[in-house]
Length: 367
Ligand code: FAD
Ligand code: UDP
Image (tube, rainbow, N blue to C red; front, side, top):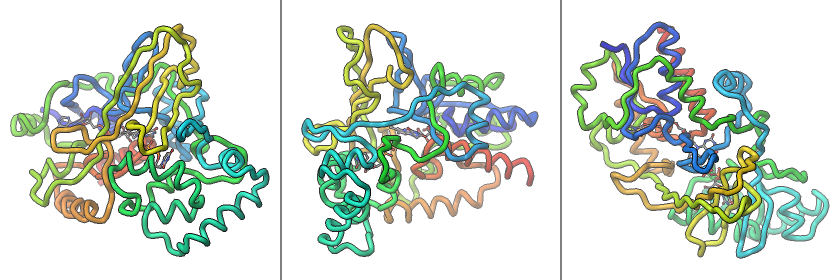
C-alpha cells in the first residue's frame, strides 16, 4: 500500500514525490510515456542533449526556487536570446533597442518610444482587449505585423483578435540594447540536461512507465491512500462538462553531420505566416557544445484533438469557463490532489510548476 499514487512523472509529480518521500511517505509514480520527466525530458543524440518536447530554458525571479533546483543540478550560464527571421530579415528578440534600430534606424530610446506612440495613436487603441490590441499598444503596428501576427496565428491556430492579451505580455519590451528574452534574475540550463534533476527527485521512489491511469484506473487507485493527478482534468472527470481545448505540436528532429553549426543560435523564430514551423532549435547551443555534428528540431504547431499530446492550454474565456466547472469538482475532493500544467489548465513555466508543487506540499503536510 502506498500513501500516494502520483499520475505523471513530469516536474510537478517529481517534486511532489521527492518532498513526500522526505516526509516518510511512500509513493508510486506512473507515467503513460516510456520515460520520466514529462515535457522537460532530454534525449542524447550525437552527444547532444536534445530537448524532445521543445526548447526548455529555466528562469525565475524567485531565489527560493532557484536555490531549490540548484540542489538537483548545476546550471550553466546560458541566456536565451532568440533571433526572429521574417522573410530573411533578422531581428533581435525580445523587442528591444536592437530590434527598434534594425527596423526603424532609431538610435535612442526616446526616438523608439516616439515611433511606437505614433503607431499606437494611429491605431486608435486605448483599452487593449485582445492579443492584437495589446501587442500594438506595446510595440506598434510594424513590429506587430512583422514579428507577432504571423507567429502568433500559426502558434495558436486562431486570429490574434481572439486570443487573450496575457500571452504577449510574457515577452519583455525594453528600451535598452539587451537581447535577454527574460527579465528574471536567474536563468540557465542544467548541466547534463533536465533528466539529471528528475532522476535525482525520483531516486528511491517506485516508478512504473508505459502505464496509462485511465486504462487501469480502479486497480491503480486501490494501491494508494491518495492520488496526485497531473494529467488532463477534463479527462479525469470523463469530459462531463465538455472537452478543454489545447494546442499541440509536432517536432521534426534532424541530425546534420556535415556541419557543426547550422544556425549560429539555439533558437530562431520564423515569424512570417507562410513558413509552416514557428521555430528551429539547435540544441547544442544550449550547452555551448563543441561536437562535430549538430541536431536541430523544427516545431510545427498543430490543432489538438483528443488522443494528441496536449502542450498548451488555450486560456480564452470559453475554455477558462469550462475549467472553472472542473475546478469546482476538484476543490471538493478529499483524496485527490490536482497539479501541474494539465490538471490546473495553466500556461505554467517550470519555475511556476515547482512553486505550485511546493505550495501543495506545504498544504498537504500542515493541515
Ligand atoms: P508535464 O511535463 O506535461 O507532465 C505530465 C506527465 O503526466 C506527462 O509525462 C504525461 O505523460 C503524464 N500523464 C498525463 N496523463 C497521464 C495518464 N492518464 N496516465 C499516466 N500518465 C499521464 N517552461 C519553462 O520554464 N521554460 C521554457 O523554456 C519552456 N518551454 C516550453 C516549450 C514547450 C514547447 C512546452 C510545451 C512547454 C514549455 N515550458 C517551458 C513549460 C514546461 O514544459 C512545463 O511547465 C512543465 O514541464 C510542466 O510540468 P508538469 O509536470 O505540469 O507537466
Ligand atoms: N511571440 C511572437 N513572436 C515571437 C515570439 C513569441 O508573436 O517571435 C508571441 C506568440 O504569441 C507566443 C507568445 O508571444 O505564443 C509567447 O511566446 P513564448 O516564447 O513565451 O512562447 P513559448 O515558449 O511558451 O511557446
